[in-house]
View (cartoon, rainbow, N blue to C red):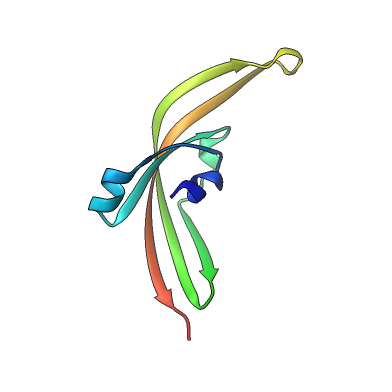
Length: 89
């Protein structure tokens, strides 16, 4: 789950209780553009095909001053990821 968060930003937390008790994982990620997170992502690892389905919900907002670069807005969101897996032939 931690690695999935790094696809979009910086993973802040992984909800292991929800992840272990259900068919999906939930984690908090700090991102610059939450609207850029896709609804679905396909991946092939070895001979397995995975379809990752993401649902994003706001978590909290934080504004950081960056000196010469102005103000940078970083948004933390919670992402629910559901994995569907198939074996390729």
